[in-house]
Length: 343
Ligand code: PHE
Image (tube, helix red, strand yellow):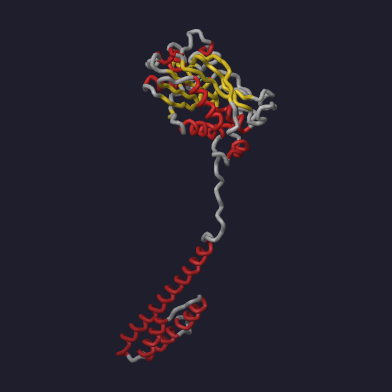
């Protein structure tokens, strides 16, 4: 009896099951009603009384070991089965990657960045200032006479009256701040959002964007300005671009001019884009009025300078042939998605 128990115990300990079927066969052989272990319990009746205690203990141990082994092997096989499932549902690393769609920069940002880079390359630094301005920085320091129509409610969004606080109508206000805080040489461009009380149409909006430039040093001339503007036009619209300057008026520059560039669509002869003139108006410019320099604490006897300002919307409309300026503000994805390849 004792040998039989020992032999079965060894068999139980050695047993390994690779499949559920093997395990079930083991259970039937060892633990089922007619299995080896219950049969030994049957035979227990014939064991001599002196040996009963020991044999009984051994028998119980054998049963416990077999039952435990059965449980352990069973849960091991179950883990394996569910492990197999997780392995199958893991991503297939050999599949081609699915790329997330890339967003696009807003066309106005694309063009603003390009303008910034063109001027940064020749030593201009970017300056920024507040969108809500006082009368001094937006108008008075810039030589606007008290009764100038641009100060009128028609053009300006006032936030407060007396003292006048308004949404800036141009980023020349930023340049006033630069001149007040810095002595020449000054080379700066001021990109930013500006506001004018205008009726919204395909060609005008009450919010738009500008880049204005300012250069002040000893002996700066109109010819210097013309050269820098020609450089800008060629970088922006292409090597073949020509420019022309027409006399104009701004309170803060004297003399003042408007700059046109040769039409980048027809190249000169005339087309619907340039309204058959061959030229496209791009920016305002001029020599900084000595009054402005003096207002900002810069000696107008010693220094001269030029300034220029352009609307980003108008240039963007021209480059991408956008017919309606309101598209820039609608955030319609069908429009914006067309600029994914732009920088
Ligand atoms: N500040 C002018 C505007 O808003 C543009 C400009 C800037 C013109 C500098 C001349 C010189 O229209």
